[in-house]
Amino acid sequence: MLEADKVFAGSIPENYDRHMVPLIFEPYAADIARRAASFSPVAVLETAAGTGAVTRALAPKLSPSASYTVTDLNQPMLDYAASRQGPDSRITWRQADALKLPFDDGAFDLVGCQFGAMFFPDRIAAYREAKRVLKPGGHFLFSVWDRIEENIFADDVTNALARIFPNDPPRFLARTPHGYHDKALIHSDLKAAGFSDVVIDTRAEQSRAPSPRVPAVAYCQGTLLRNEIEAREAGRLASATDYAESVIADRHGSGEVAAKIQAHIIVAVA
Image (cartoon, rainbow, N blue to C red; front, top):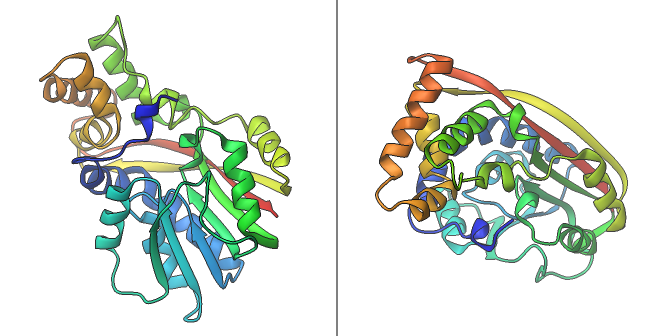
């Protein structure tokens, strides 16, 4: 992962929430929220919360007496998440690095993280921090994307951009969001961080959109792929998005489109 792969700023938070969340994150947010609520946690920490897809799904499922601390490394993403959430005295918003959590040992029953671990520069260190702030027997619940070939629109866009920029293809999607999919490695990293009873569930869903334009804009302009495109040729973002749209239309049709997405959902016990 490159250092630039962690900087979600400018127009990216809004485009990310408007396009990426309904396209690929909402079904998994609902699943994570259901799993989290099944543990009946009283004190919950969410790391790498992004624009709040899980927060919006989980908050209604928590007890009235629960406390819910929502964090992200990127303040612009956290600000956008807070703006989307209704008033809720149980929720505390706080900028925080998952590798250096500003919380006491054993402060939480549950630590959750949807699609954030791929961005951690030192995953074992982040997992150790999650374990440190969990009470003994507490649960660490998180998800990561499976390999890019199992996530069709992401693969389509990556292959399209490789044809536009053959000498230096933008590889953000394959490198980072889909770069941490090896289940044996995930299991090993968690064990190294001190977790036990690690269970990994691979879950397929469908990514749906009203037109090929939606996934093209979502990936090209609502993720850090945007920065890679613009770095290769100034002013090329619009035409690159158009080309990605045409590739998706050729493969999936010009009307409503749907394609497979797949992720690993992991539960580990502190």
